[in-house]
Image (cartoon, rainbow, N blue to C red; front, side, top):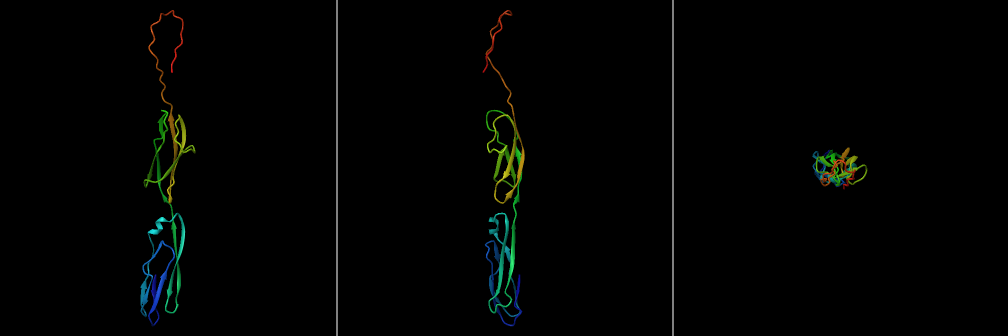
Length: 178
C-alpha cells in the first residue's frame, strides 16, 4: 500500500493488524507534506501452522495527526491441503502363518498414513483376497490409494517314513500323516 500526505503539514501515521500470520513492513511513522511511503503487507511463516481453511484479517491505516483519511483494508488467506501421491506395494504373498502387511510409499515423503485391510487395521494372515486402503492422515495433506492384497495358499507337503517292503498279496493297510 502507498500512503500519501496530500496536506500542507507533516502527519503521524500508524498501521495495525491482528492476525499473527500477517506482517507489515512498517507500523508507523511521520510523512512530510506531499511525501509518500509504502507499507508492504505479507503472509509470514506463522501461516504454515494453520490448518486447512479460509482466514481473514484487516489492516488499519490511521492518520494520528487529524484522523483524516483513516482506512481499513482486508487481507485474506486460503490454506489448501497438499496433495500426496500414495503407492501400494507387496500386494502378493504366500501364506506362512504370519501377517502380510503391504508397503506404502508417499511422494512427498514421508507422510503419516493409515492402512486398512477390508476395513480392519491389522494385516491379514490367512490365504485370500483383501481390499486395501491407504489414506494420508497427516494434517494439511491429502491422498490415498487402494488395491487388493492376495495371499496365496501355501504348497502342501506330506512326509512320512519310508515303508518296509511288503509282498503283493499283503492285505491293504492305512497310512498316517501329520
